[in-house]
Image (cartoon, rainbow, N blue to C red; front, side, top):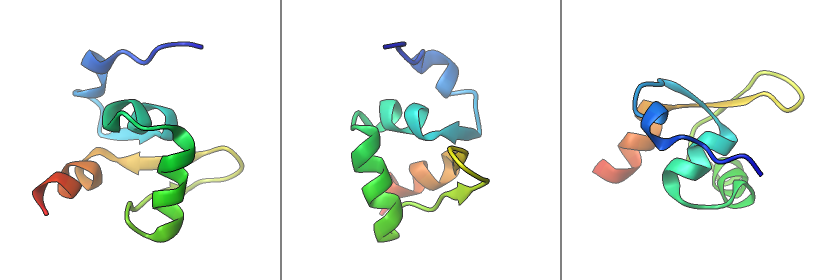
Amino acid sequence: MNKVDLNNLNEKEILTVKEAAALLNCSTRSLYRHINDGQIKAANLGNRLTRIKRSDIDWLFKK
């Protein structure tokens, strides 16, 4: 399993599900569950192309 470089995640505005899960320290399955529940906004661009804005993840911590 490839590890995600957390230093590069600070510079990216659009994240994959795997990158967002690494940033939140959770599994991709948990992240998909939060997306389906509406707790995290995400854009589904096609099959296996779900993207999440970094600002939406940052917003979770400002609640």
